[in-house]
Image 1 (tube, rainbow, N blue to C red):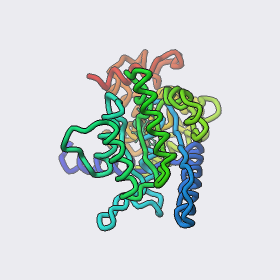
Image 2 (cartoon, rainbow, N blue to C red; image 1 turned 90 degrees about the vertical axis):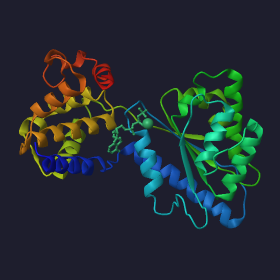
Image 3 (cartoon, helix red, strand yellow; image 1 turned 90 degrees about the horizontal axis):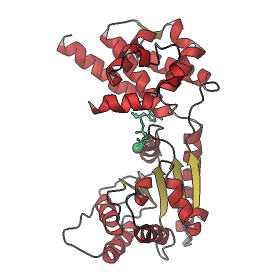
Image 4 (cartoon, rainbow, N blue to C red; image 1 turned 135 degrees about the horizontal axis):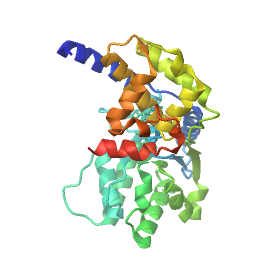
Amino acid sequence: MTESLNTGIQQRVLALRSIFSSNQAYRKFEDRFGYLLERRRAEIAAGVIAEARCVALIGASGSGKTTAARHLITTLPEVVSNDLETGRMDVASLSVPTPATLKFVGQTTLAALGFPLRREKTAQTIWDMVKDHLAARQTLFLHYDEAQDLSRHQTPKELNSVVSTLKSLMQHPVWPVGLILTGTEELKTIINHDSQLARRVFPVEFPQLNPLLDTDRVIHLLNHYTERAGMSGSDDVATAEFAARLIHAADREFGLLIELAISALEEAMRSDAEKLEIVHFTQMFRKRSGCIDGLNPFVAADFERIDCRRLLDRGGET
Ligand SMILES: Nc1ncnc2c1ncn2[C@@H]1O[C@H](COP(=O)(O)OP(=O)(O)OP(=O)(O)O)[C@@H](O)[C@H]1O
Ligand SMILES: [Mg+2]
């Protein structure tokens, strides 16, 4: 394959990756966040100081949490992400660092606000600085991705101190800040660990795809990506059975399904095909997992017994 052809394919694939596909859970997340944002803005305009709230987006790995949060923060027209002149940062976003000690989470939050620490300081001082900088940057929401890590390798005492610090941000007497927490199922343990926190959280879950109920949606989604790739799909990839195989291959996760569909389209582009066929999915899965056809959900008769997640994870390691 010539270099220019290769570059052309890469550009087409990048264009597909930049598409954001909405779904019901995303709309709920967006609605809730929009509501809290408006409420906070109205309070600021009226000079009222009220406790802020938290939205938690919970879903399995590959469901699309990070993508959803990034899309929400960067595309809402009224959200200023980082104004260089005024220093305004409506939403500060970061991943929970490891180890998630009070001090390290504070230090990483400070860095996300644009103030990396140069000298060693106590956790208390660091969080006082975080609160000052949140007010200085007029930050309305703080987003922690991988928020389930807040409880990983943590002593109960450390977890308590992190949770009470997060609560204290929402209850700050001068500049309360709302939270967006995105994470896997374990995030629920953290939220439920503290009833005061639980009461302030609005949870949104990314449900898994259902191989019986979601086939039409998946066929529609695949069609959309195929069209955007400038191709058409063969009749074989527009069946409920094929959709069920694709859902299974993606371990029922929405984001992972889109990722696999784009990889199959890339495979079709590389073989210079005009139509997207099942064989492109078969080849894509073979390459990603390195497994034999008996373990390939696009070929095997009894595909439901295959643990696709394990195969894909293992393939990704090599
Ligand atoms: N709404 C979406 N539209 C298009 N592609 C998406 C969407 N959501 C997720 N994806 C794709 O799915 C893949 C996984 O998504 P993402 O990384 O957001 O999942 P996650 O839930 O954060 O997983 P993890 O828990 O492992 O961090 C990414 O390649 C992303 O591009
Ligand atoms: Mg993620």
